[in-house]
Image (cartoon, rainbow, N blue to C red; front, side):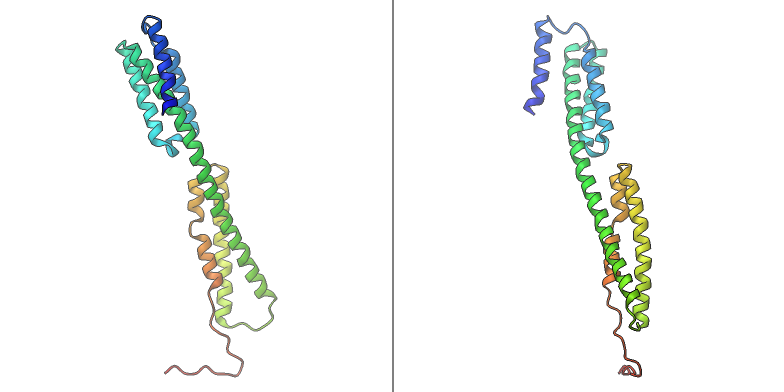
Length: 201
């Protein structure tokens, strides 16, 4: 906070030494607007909404002060707007990095689960031991779950490529857990040929 106050104090001091702010702070207002646009491009509206709104509010107050010909106040608000916008850009960059890392991690978990599921299906394909009906159904369920997971993976990859990390996370939410559950489900025990199941009491 201290670092953000110093530039405003220096600018105001210069204004007073020059005999008062006799002209609108056009340069500072332009810089504030540029900083706000840079923050918007960095995703501050989503990832640093409070700080971004503070920058916009301060800019509005600066232009209002110019209308009232209170150029000293206009300068103060313009500098404040610029500082809020620059801070919003830094917050947004950090938040975007964290959200991206989370999205990539979620995607990698699904890809890992898909690999395990593929191994389970391939193992069943090479196993010549007769399978029970329940085991056959489980393999079919795993295949269907793999198809669903692959669709989710594709959507997540496209979202990440478009830097829409929230959509990427949404695409794979719960997919890895579901796939693991299907793979780990224990089918009914096999019954040796010629042996009847005991009747239920």
